[in-house]
Amino acid sequence: MDFLALYSPIWRKALILSWPVMFSHVFSTAMRTTDMLLMGGFGPAAVTAVGLGDVWDRIVLQLGLGLGTGSIALISQETGGSGAEGERDAGDVVTQVLVTGFAVGLPFILVGHLMAQTMIAILGAGADVIHLAAQYLQIIFSAAPFRIVNLIAAKAIQGTGDTRTPMAIGITGNAVNIGLSVGLVWGVGPLPALGVPGVGWGTALANFLMTVMYVAVLSHPATRLTLRMPPGGWDLTITRQLLRVSIPRILQGGYQVLISFPFNAVVLLFGTEAAAAFHVSRRIQQQLIAPMQRSYATVSTILVGQALGRDAEAESRRTGSAMLWLSALTIGAVGLLLFLLAPQVVRPFSADPTTVAHSIRFLRALSLGAPILASFMILSGLLAGAGDTRTAFYASVASQTLLMLGLSYAMSVVLGLGVTGVVIGLVADYAGRTGLVALRFASGKWVSEARDMIAERNRRNMRD
Image (cartoon, rainbow, N blue to C red):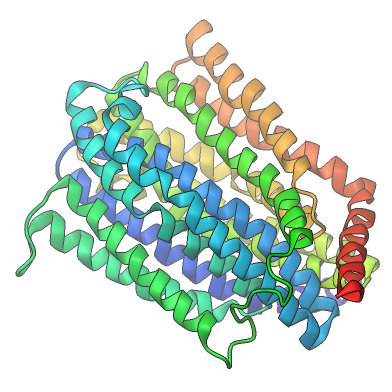
């Protein structure tokens, strides 16, 4: 009874905030899942092509998520403790980060047109996969500025405690994406039949539409978080704090992308079917489990940031414990169910028996590791709410290097365990990352870091 009395108010608030975020991720991943299902009709080469294109596209994703993490940390702290004045300051933050994000995305357009085939060839793919993947990558890189803006805008609005507006925009955009992808792949109605490039064009056009919707919302005077430049022009205090929080998160995501290259190469050693199986299992995990993991991490950042904005240290610690228990109970149950139903879940993605067998093995490993990975994401989100994104970066680099890549290679190639060795390395990596960030959270040093950031912004406000 004491357990429920302690955590149920936090769970209630967290679930109210998290379900729109969860639905947003469900529809977002449904778009990618649709792409995989569509490509399954063209064979393992097409599935691998989209999967390898997405490996490079994760650079764009991580840039947007990194800048979004910085904005959500600052905005949640401002709106948690400063009332209407804080919301005006939050408008300064989101304006500066959106402009920065759009500019960061522009070079990807040129890179995609000049280097797409080379970038895919680096991953060790065959000639048939290179041609298809390069076409796909070129198209989705063309939409990079819009995708980064969308990720930042969603995180910024969520930082104010409004998780429903990003959900509405996300669902609309991804529904359009799914419809365009189906239509452009198969040539439905007046749309041309483009095959593999069709899923890329569906993604690019939907991202542009979502950017238009976010700008319209943030430009409306009735919106809590309104686009505005600071009265004195570009604010370097905001920029410094934004980069202090965002850069480690961007580097963390960038390293995840970087290390995925040799990791995908290790998986490809066991054939195209194994590579296709890995991408299929990850897509299922992203569709069914990741929305819960990501929504809990986002809500953890919001709640801790707002609590620290009110200087409520005990509340922020209690929030951390409550979110970890919520994750263990809910994601643990979903992971167990997916482990049991893995054969039935993977079969719609491929008719190839070898691909199906490998997919079942990968999916069961990801399902067992789901609660562990969720704990890492929640703890990282809690620390991010205080402005500490460095710990998760260091933990990811150490664990992914030594365990995901090093242990996987040693077990699968050196010891000859094959795909089973890769699976062992994946789960070990989840546990290693989680243990390292848990040590930092237990130390409590992140609280003083948040207080220093808030005090610095308050001094700026007094000078203004």
